[in-house]
Image (cartoon, rainbow, N blue to C red; front, side, top):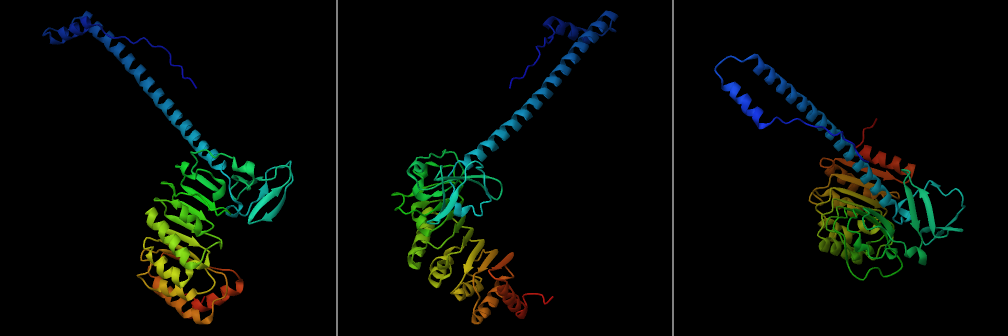
Length: 356
């Protein structure tokens, strides 16, 4: 875009005129008519110049505002296009609403936890997600491994085996990583700006160093033996020197007695905790009942995947009574309607739910 500003000839009074004006002002006699006309004439010229400068300054402000608006639009568009270029694993994008490729029919089959489309373009799928964003994911085909992701992207979702030189993406702020079949990178990957991490296994943590991480989500059940998982998480936090404020997981290892005692109890910076419960629920209930456990916790989310044994309701009620004064929110999700009725009766019995 090119702006055309008309050429203006601005009048600058000669030095002789300045001395003449000064001489007139110093005179003790009354102004002559010729002096008055000359002064008024030059004042008019100066006023015209001021109005021209005012108009130019106003126009410059308009041009600057327009340029800033266009720059912001380009920056936002660049971020959107950059994010959509990364391969996205389907497990982090379910449910996928519809296929945007209208000309090619795909027969989608389940293989190893990844939905791989079969057909003329086997190995690549194009779908729209919940928010209408274009999602492109690649299966583990040799040609797909040659796909190069731009290094300035800020969000990445991929199988760890399928992204070469992950450390080269220093602008990343959010990562969704799935564990692959291979051993993974041979050296630790340092990503200084990643704040949100979603992993399908704690095994992935052994390859990462994320000093800015504050939000960790571990989903799925590809979790090693509990003592190994504890060591993986503790080593990751120690070597990354990060301070987690949110931990969310549906892995049952995270609520076991060993993990609660040797790992979760050390996360004093946690503000938000989201866990799934199936068995050994008494461990997490007893721990949460203590105010010294996770002292900064403000938001608690519990996902009940099965009915709780009657003997566990007392620790559950004690935890609610102890924490309710300090938490800003407690959310409880149940898998079956009958569980909600059972839970409501217990909360009402212990006085934590209005009988109405």
